[in-house]
Length: 317
Ligand SMILES: Nc1ncnc2c1ncn2[C@@H]1O[C@H](COP(=O)(O)OP(=O)(O)O)[C@@H](O)[C@H]1O
Ligand SMILES: N[C@@H](CCOP(=O)(O)O)C(=O)O
Image: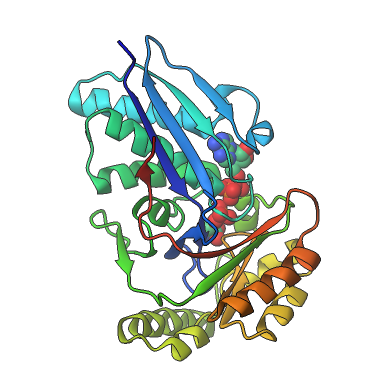
């Protein structure tokens, strides 16, 4: 008899989306069909083990105990035992396709794929919010504080707003179906935890007023489909000015994309990936060509033209 196997794919994501620090995130699907994200496979076995492959597997910390997927398994198993008095005897395989410290929600993608596959394998033992809480907890262990703006979109798909409540933790928003999201990973590494330490502990009242105004007007625009006003709200008063020092050629990249009709441009998560929004595919291609030539720093870098991935995490075969 063949052992039961469950395999889940979790897409890359843009945290913050410029105007929603820790509160807004978007899941990505390259338009050329590339699978931009990690997958995790769980198979019945007598004892836990973790194997890893994929383009960025060799950049993971050595030792399976240091891989976030092992920590996900332990965390899930403890919850399963304490709440359902059950045991999940499995081996786990991680396909690491997303570069680490890239600003594309790399750790989130591994975490989400792992929890999703474990939960499906355990017969959907936990609800969506219970599982999302676990994902946020593990993401917090990596970055130093719990934030859902990568795990939530990677899990449920689309453009997602965090509620700050235990249930629902996240709400999917409408967006503009015609938008192309051009992402470019420069190839260097930025630690999310370190990029968070760069931020001030307190902000000026004027910045907090701008933050609240921008996010609320943006959400209004999504529901009224006012693309022009929505795009005007997409600037970052919280993180960009403090983090862009870590990103060589960030200002040049903004200038190049905006002068090619980008609706918005910003840092994806904590960077170094940047994103630009284009209304037309030929404009997206022009921005991508510039970013590939000028923003990428080494052979690890890449760029994709994406749309929002509305499905989020899915089972794959
Ligand atoms: N499966 C994994 N995927 C990504 N990072 C992992 C994984 N397991 C452990 N790590 C560690 O977690 C940290 C992730 O760093 P972080 O800057 O948060 O990356 P990202 O922003 O790409 O999620 C790194 O220190 C990395 O070595
Ligand atoms: N809101 C977080 C998002 C981090 O995203 P990542 O992809 O860089 O891990 C932050 O800005 O710190």
